[in-house]
Image (cartoon, rainbow, N blue to C red; front, side, top):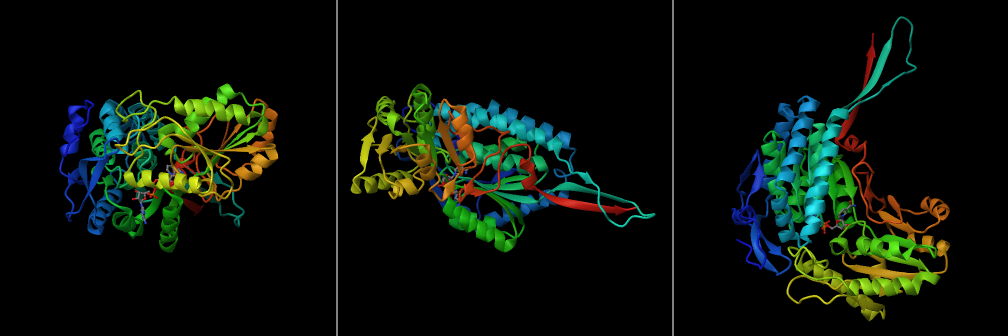
Length: 498
Ligand code: NAD
């Protein structure tokens, strides 16, 4: 298979696309035990650029057993933390070194702008990798005093954190490298082994990541990859008895199913799920800040961002100006394939996802919503026009459900009270933003917003040192931050009489 589009790609990318489909087990690309493959499409043309293995339950079993053997032999788990840290820092260096290959591959399979691939999938990834690598040498427990019976006997009591075992990392397709690393890196930093399953829509870069980890010095078997769909490979992985922890990022529906599996097996689980994220614009907000902020918050990566702004509640005096400025902005966006660095509107990830987003817009039209479409898009490829839906109404499907596309609903509200009530009227609670020049109002409202992250005068900024995760049905647990590795360890209490 190959890319035959109009842009020049690196020879290494062409070579990678032409490799036989494989999964990654025990430090190498290996063939599936089955023969099923999944086509990988270039979303800008709809043409197939590669085939990936659709892994069988037997493939998954092989990968998990390899990870389990690597965990048990202790080479990684019992390595000096400083050596693990050094290898993981090298891994980050190599991802940067191969950055253009990673970026082009990601843009080719995912559709996103090459600029975003370079900035986030490679640049931000390397920063997250270094942050987590550094945590390898910070794992610690506590000593504590107890009230156990004393006398001649003394007690020393403390906790230690121990690597949890084999981690199943299940990733979505919107930021395939970055989010895969949010699973793989904390697992590796604690001394766990990991089996990563990327989305069936974007399977390629995970395989290159695993190869790169080996080059950095991660022992064979510690980081395996199975590609394939959720129904077979995903289910086999999350149900496998040798999996100690599942780290899942994806939709709320899949997260609930995985959560139930995890509970029935007592597998530890972290769920990072969907969002329906409000942006509250108060009447004193500075539109010169709000407009670029909402354009990035709503349209970055085609709106295929879990924390993307999707419901804007604006106080009445600013409504007309805000709608006018956003309309001008979406009309001024340049459109093109992800490999065109100037194009701001790129295709969505797949034909199925394009159809899903269009179905929300069709429903809104049928319900009489006022739709403002931005820059025109080509027929070839999975493009969708950037779109505003004015006064969508609280019960419209696109107000209630995650659309995950370039669509912003804009609603006029009487005051901040109404804005907060409507913002909180959602089963999801991942992120939210407040736009105001009055920090006093912001400080009052922050505690009333039901979301895992509240941004003020910005939206969708994330940082390795700032915990991230959802309230309500947006998930369970937190990623990032100084305590991130806790979820990849078991806490053991030790009680010594002496
Ligand atoms: P998805 O739930 O369809 O798939 C995610 C992953 O789960 C894929 O690898 C898929 O193959 C696998 N999967 C599907 N069914 C499975 C099953 N029964 N058992 C095990 N694995 C299964 O999600 P998606 O469409 O790939 O990604 C988009 C979603 O991800 C959006 O809802 C978005 O909000 C969410 N997301 C959340 C965050 C966050 O940090 N909260 C970040 C990015 C994306």
